Length: 374
Ligand code: F6P
Image 1 (cartoon, rainbow, N blue to C red):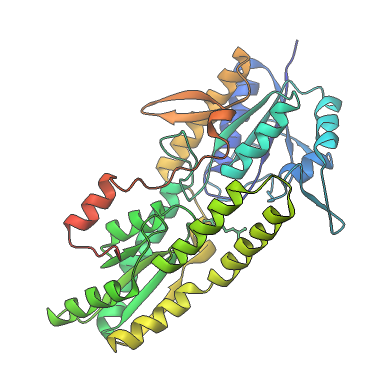
Image 2: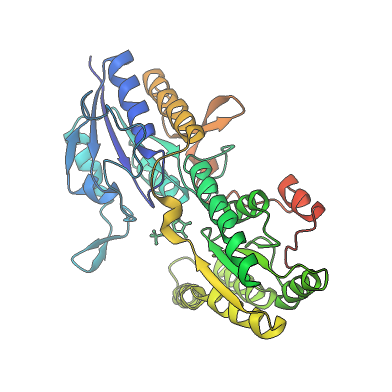
């Protein structure tokens, strides 16, 4: 009997999503004679039953396109914005799944998507996921698609900032994406030869950063590039976050105390949004060297995927079809060396792939004299 497969993209978009959609759809239809439909705009479109038939003509010619032909959203099944009210729409999603007689639902997403997919698995749906994000912070996979492209874009930005920083003898702070994980800032900082790299995993002292810049100036280097992940924090802020996070862990689920701590955390992150503006100002005051800030933002997520991302997305997407055919569900298709593994969602959801403090990238950065702010 023909199997029916649904597919959606959820969370922030990234280069390589279309290559993965194409990989899943071509292998499902071409090798296994399955029928594939796409749901628009993530879990929201699934709940609203907004579909598109992913036949051969639709997935042809999309390999090199950025973004996602399906559209995406950050809506969660259990906390969906319905006319301004937050509602649990999980049961409505389960109904749509059964209405289409789906044999499997493929969810392409980052950390949040793994958690949401696990919720659907617990409702009895045959879910299978693929790991995407420019942040490279999905647990259990060697790498996520989207990361390599973003790393190339961010590296080019750091490269280009050198000539203008040198010409004006300035400090240029460049903010790169990465709320919790510093892979992108660390990778682009190393590849682009940043003089200082600040990542969330290593809380920094602004005095240490200023000293590194001044010491370069003493050696006759009249410019400095500071690559900062958007989630990097100074030691004081990191302590505050740790305290609040520990308190939240201890507070009872759904308690008033937990809600209040969550609100405090949200407020903290809101205020932290412009921390690179403050950091740049502080560095200018402390070093007396003219300083500028570049925020790269969503440029890092846009445009054509790199060759490595196209290959990875195609590898994972086509392997996903094989797992569906074999009846392997409730898992994430993860890259391991040159192969793939199906990891149970319970082992992935709620975990994060942060940069380990003993990682070779950190050692390499320190060994070439890069200041990491600690
Ligand atoms: O998808 C990951 C990511 O790009 C993060 O690096 C960044 O912090 C976040 O998404 C930005 O999200 P949005 O596009 O929803 O503002």
